[in-house]
Length: 302
Image 1 (tube, one colour):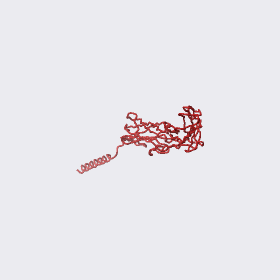
Image 2 (cartoon, rainbow, N blue to C red):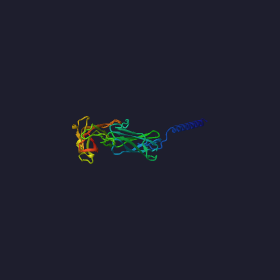
Image 3 (cartoon, rainbow, N blue to C red):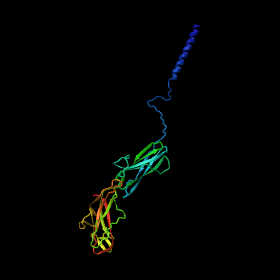
Image 4 (cartoon, one colour):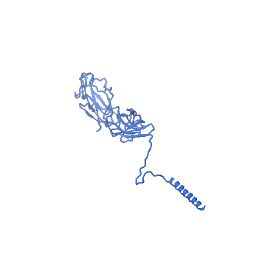
């Protein structure tokens, strides 16, 4: 009887040990790969919105401004968007001494907040960004910075290569301007008549002048219904009220006006203008209505 109890006891102990070992083995992780000095771990993520990328900005290599007007500069912007949801592109056009984020200034900074999509909505799109540069904008190196935004407000940007805005040497005189000396008699000298010249470019300038009656170099100031007026009878000065005898004769050929230069304009509405004062004396061998030409020419200030 005792032997049976001992056998039963041993059997229970054996079963209990097996049970404990089974529980222990359940807690040991199963390793499917072999242990080594290098182990690879797979990673994953789901990007729900990829930011647009500004791949390219193409602007003209050089820009010639328009005298007394605006020059439209067009930059073409290529945008890649994996999600195909770019909806806004804006851009700035700025001089090399300022930053893309600076405020607009007609001398050195322009902004386009609504560049135009020139292609169908797709992963890659082309936008046109235009800027109207005024005639007195700085000459030198400019850049364009474009930023693309998608409908989740993610963004990307890029900067163009340098664009050279060329110096502009130009003047403005209204086309209907006539230097009218009025009604004069033989031997009479007119009073001062003003010729106002405005700088229509982006640099300081000197002014040259020459005149003729019918063709350049004809040595005349005016051709009349009767006779002519020699160029020595038409004179100018850079200050008003000068005696006719102290004034400068109308040049036969292009000649720089001494003491006259015009500053460049630096703000909208603040024109830079200078004046010459002209007198005419009537010789004895002329009569009726007389007409002639004056040609003013600008050059970079020396």
